[in-house]
Image (cartoon, rainbow, N blue to C red; front, top):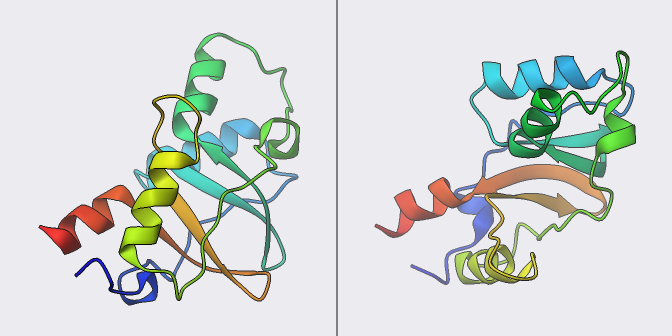
Length: 129
């Protein structure tokens, strides 16, 4: 089971945003689709990621000025895996990617520099249990 490739269970139709998108609209997209993160893409290439937790927290604290763009707030150092990686690798990356006690909820899947999918902790849990 843990040797299964992430490509077998990843979501292929990834909901994304662009660097020029207003943070408020990106947050609305996160809420509309009930997802925890949005990969930021330039064409098919992933250049960043934003999370509902970070964006929502900062919106509540009024940290963004009107017109703040996604590229100004996105995490640029995106942790990704390959479609050929196993579920075990995905879990290890989710656990080890954030120093301390944080765990990544979703990991974009990249092949030949292109965003081809995304896998969430929920996808893995449903598959394993």
